[in-house]
Length: 304
Image 1 (cartoon, rainbow, N blue to C red):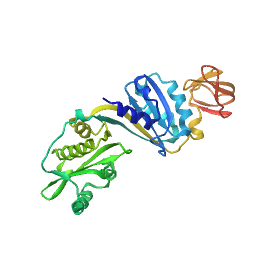
Image 2: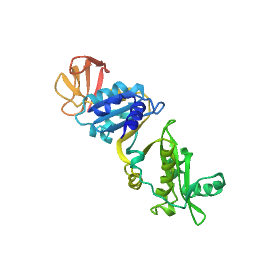
Image 3: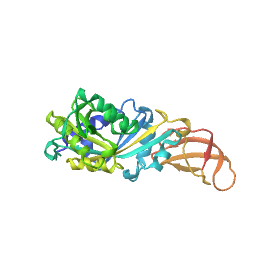
Image 4: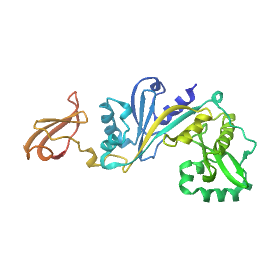
């Protein structure tokens, strides 16, 4: 039963609820990701939902219109070509999990308890020993609710907490001390956090990189099922730069060349031999398959 998840992600990504059951692609301006300088490619069943800054919508729409396989839409090579000089970093793919109360498989431990103000000194030591990178990656700093902890010989072995995305939806975050990883402490504290959140009627997400195999296995051990997968792309700008907007085409001895499924009508004035060359040309229009103009381009293009 994933209706609550379908509703949340539809609202978060700005798509219609009914879209999840229909193969295809949706490209929308950021809603839940408002303010994020980047793009999400979110794949649920056979639906690709793309969330992007307003300034990138036209550029991305043209890209996805010509895709033959949505599965390869977020591969690094394709993304670098799509975003050009504005590409910064690809993150993912990430696992998106869903957990219903009936599917929850708790991991009980009598040594797990709620974190209290009296644990502040031990928490400070734990933070220092884990380091800033682990703290940031785990998300534990943004998970102040339903915090759970387990100690080993007076030292914190693992901490978990609930990170709210809105009033009713959030995800558990967990961080295990480097010395105690692989010992089951993370599962024990995360289980208590999940149990407490479910008891309050929360909708439990789970987001972690697919490459973080232990985290994915931990989620599945607690009963999470794979709901979706997404790739995030960080960009250098909230709209395409002039360089990114220029079409990437191959030199051809013809008055018509194709780039990204568009037809570029040109009248060559000069060229130099075979292969890549700078061609001074008279540019009329960039048109789609129906002859509709899309954008004009400079009088001199670098082919290659």
